[in-house]
Structure formats: structure tokens, C-alpha cells
Image (cartoon, rainbow, N blue to C red; front, side, top):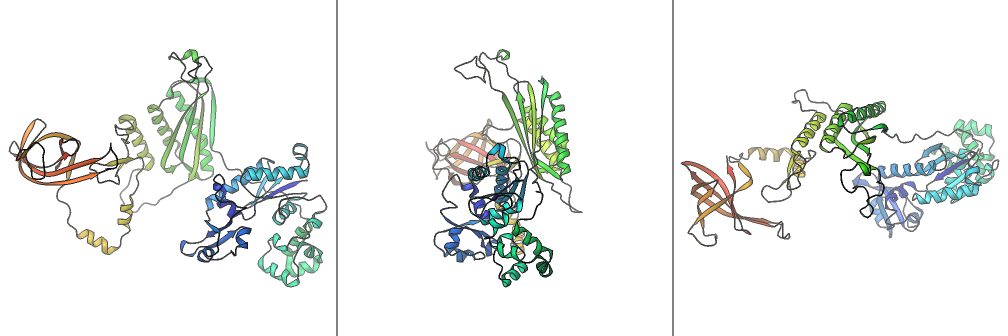
Length: 547
């Protein structure tokens, strides 16, 4: 039997730096680094490396105390980074064995029995383990032994590469401190009071009196110190892959038969999600296309390089991605959304292979109020939006989404808005929702606006006669008549001008308006309008009408 172990010292610190290894601005080996954890008001040192300990950092120290130590780099602990680092560590171990145990955060054990024929001698395997861990961005200790726990304790206690021959576990582990065994605090205090400091002293104690005083946990610790424990690994379950694909015997050109294939794949994926009580809000469809040079209508194959039109084309991939506002387990909804998306973006060639991948997400359950009005289901709303996009298109002339949820942009420019694919609550709305009751009462007491401006999109071009007339309007000139839509309206009353401008730093996007509110008499009917003059072009426009 042969087992290998990879142990990452100070794993929270290395996990915090795991995504920064490409920048090389901070190094685990060269810098003093400490990781903070806890609430924002009471951050404390959770872990640190050896350089930080030499600089005076102690576990449990507050952030203010840690900042007083010179040269110490502080990082915030993030569970997502530790999970990603542990996944990379498992991937490193899977490169040497299919049976891998995720023993603890930063520690993996794997079965290398029979691997010497493929990987070489045990010292060579240890070097390969260390090199692979370094490629994954870890500074790790590696160990090989005839049983799993001996390899684990050797990797925890000895730096670098350790190889323990079968039968020499007790001798090689004798110098390790008993803290490597991670006993319970009360057992550790008892051993310390007895003067037991290392594996050798613990292994030399008589077993029966030790069991009488510490029970079976004490006997198990002694067997670990002697290297006598033999156990089976608990294989780590690899992350589930929710992906299905099928290669078709005959290429499919029509969307209807393609929908039957996609429906079958979605049914399998949704069943696997439901078995794990999961849903999905992100789906990716990959269609491998069949492209032949002699079947193309174009004179030159678009997939081939321009310099060599006769070269064989590479396999074309048509990829579509769907993102839902909330997770769902309804395969019919996903199928309908894919059908609508493919109807608007059909594949340019026959499909020979279909691959569907769904990304798992937690099922979201909500309880509606008894007297709360029913709202449309998010999935049905998404289908409605997809149908609208297929009918009116996705983008307008200004590269804005045609279908979605309108929201104001951070600008004072009139008619400045954007359309979002998902409904998002603005920061101002959140602040207003979180205000106290006193401010809410003040807002309720404010009078409601009496006039509403109905904007013309786009603004109507107009010709304005000013009084007194002059070649160029100025502040002293007042609009006397407005001509728009083929009619001339007399200005009964005018108020203004108000100047608004913005984007002065952008030559193409700058704007400057002189706005007037005017009461017009058109065919004996009075109306209140807003007009403005573009200061750059000198053109007048009717911006809207007050209701």
C-alpha cells in the first residue's frame, strides 16, 4: 500500500492569495501576510504565515493591533476563495490518483498503490507532487507512507518532501509534537500535565493505563503516533457536471426537429438537478455545425482563411446562452426560451452535434402574503419578454435594449434612460425605502405634482418667431409664435429661458438647451408645451406637452 498527502500550510492565507498569483505583487514566501475574519466592527486575525508570526502577529489579535505591526499585509477571509483553492488542490491530486480524500481544508490524501510503475520511485513521486502543487499556485508539504494517517501527519509536521518506508512510521514520526494529532483541548492539557510533548513519548506509554485515563480517544491517538492505524479513504465526490450532448446521425436543418433533441437533453438535466434539490438560472447551448466548402453559396468559404480559400474549414460552433432572473426546475420553460432564442438567432448551417449545459443554483422558495396581489411568475414573464424581443428586435438605433425594464441614467440630460434586461432597484430607491418613519411622514405631506410632461420621442422640429425679432435669439427675446406639424400657434404666455447642459468634455455628446414653458393657442384651443433651442445648432424643438 502507498498513500500520498499534500498539505498546504496556513491554508487560509494561501487561499486569500490564490487568485493573486499571476500578479506576483504579494508572495506567500516573501511577505508577512495575515487573514482577518469576523464582523466588520470586530475583525480579528484568523490565520497568518511564518513571516507574520515573526513580525509579532498572533492569532486573535484585532485589526488595529495588526496594523501596528510594520510590513504586514492584511487580507479579508473569503469562503469563496477557500472553496476555489480546495477545488484546485483536489484537481492537483486527481492528476495522480482517481481515489482522493478531501481530509481537511488545505489537505488531501490519495491512494498511490501501484503508481510506482507509472510514476517512478517514491522520492520521484514526491518531487512530482511538489512540482504539481507549485504549478497550481500552492506552497505545500508532501509525504508518502504505507498508511494514510502516517502520510497525513508527516505532511503536517515536516516541511518539504517526506518519504516513510513501511514499518518505520513510529521512528520517523517520533519527533513530531502531539499538536499535530489535533487532540481535543482537554486531552491535550492532560498530556501536557504528564509531560508528553511528542509522538515518541505518547507511543511509549502503556496502553491499558492510558485507556483507563483517556478512554478510547487516547488509545486512538497513541495508535496514530505509532503509525498503526489502517483505514480506507473516503473518496471526495467530484463536483457534478450537468452537461448532456448527443451527436446526430444525420444533420438537422430545421428548428422543429432540433427542438425534440434539445427537449430530450433538458429532460435528463432537469431530472439530475431535481435529484440534488437544485435548479438552474444559467443555460448554455452549443451547436456544432456541419460546413462544407463545396456546399457554400458564397464564392469563398467564410470559415477558411482568406489567403487559402480551398483550405478545409474548422468545425463551426453556434453558441447561445440564457440567463434567467430566478432559478427554475421547469424544463418546458427552458425549452420555450431556447426555441424563441433560436428563432431569432438560427444556426447558419445544419447541426450535427448538440450540447446543453446547465449551471446549478439553489431553489428559491418564497411565501406570498395572504392579502398581497398575485404577481406573474418569473418564468412566464421571461417567456413574454423573449416573445417581445423576437417581435420587435433586441436593439434600437442607439444600441439600447428594446425590451426590458426602463431606468433613469445618472444624467440630467432630458430623455436620458436605459433599458435593463432585469429589474434592478436603484440606490436612491433603496435609500428611500430604508428611511425612518419621520421622513416618510414628511414625504407623505408633500403635495403631489399637478402637471405631467408627456415627452415627444423624438422631439418635434419647430420654427419659433421671437419678439422682438433679431437674427440671433438672446435672453431678452421671448417666443411669440411656434410653428410645428404644419400649424402656427400663438404664444399666449411664456416662461423662461432655463439653460441646461452637460457632457461638455465630450465633443460628440455635449448638449446645451435653452428651455421655455409656453402656453399656446392653436385653433382656439389652449395648451401648455415645453420648447427648447439647441444652442449648438440653433434649431428649435417641441419637447413635450403638459397633461
